[in-house]
Image (tube, rainbow, N blue to C red; front, top):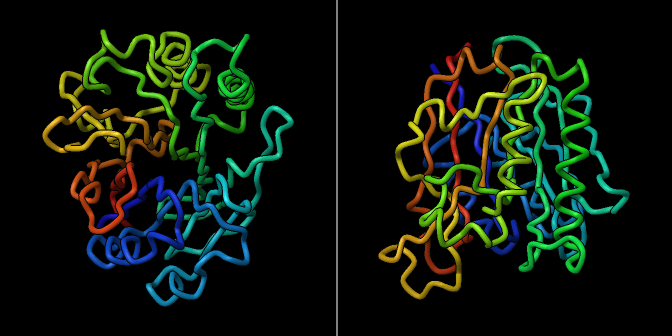
Length: 270
């Protein structure tokens, strides 16, 4: 028996609830972390997800924008959220659980996209993104992050040249600029080294994407994707990691897919 943790930017959980329920029924993950739920806590589809087998829920919503949630088959305690850059947006929620190998703190992040212009002097959205990454760097340097943590979500950064369809053409495009990729890689390889659980199982020489733009009329054939969605863990948790995959088929889900697809990390079970 294995345990599965999934991250997925759903781009409105109420609009795409049938797609979420379809995914849960088909793949039966143990934990699902959603970003951009785009609803307040009281609007979250608590009952539908409970009936689907996910009664344990940690929701940090916001009217119309952002919002993150963790739904789980396993109990969730110590639910909390953190504000970054003193901007009160719902971009983080965490909860304590146990997937069979001791206490594990789950963190669900929706890192700012950063707008279109990669210049913090003229683009406050990009400034916010860089500030968010800077605060993450400081927070993750704390001793508590040495073990027992898993972080996941839409990081809005494709850090490796094979995480984008064209490294050369995207070097000046927000999500793959050097200042972003270097900042994220510095976190990955920082004081308490994280493990990128997807790339642990899918070598860096393979192209890998989790997002395809709505702007592409023929997204599948064009295949101009980026790997913006990630699942990382501390080394002790990564020891139990036995597989990972990105479910590309859900980008073509009819009639209204998200532009992101689910990313799954699997662990040795109980």
